[in-house]
Image (cartoon, rainbow, N blue to C red):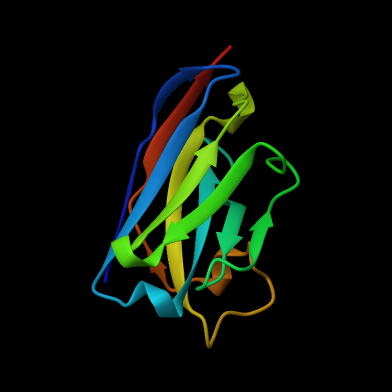
Length: 126
């Protein structure tokens, strides 16, 4: 199983980025996906999650109204559209997967996820 996160970069405050998480080695139709981030010196924070069909989405309060998670199972890819970016959004962003049948109730907890990709860096300048 491989999860490849991409799309990070350097952007000014107020700008936008769209992250992608490309999955291989699993049938994405049966997996929930979460996006997490980790800033230097801080713990890993759940940002957003989406169920296997895309019918249910979840957001941390800190990004609600600014970030949108979506998925295209035909392309085995999950997206995170990030708008109105703030310097405090600066972090290494990871995507993670969990089988929908064993996905627990803590949608934004890292402990709910079994497969992890490498991170993509997002830096927001003020």
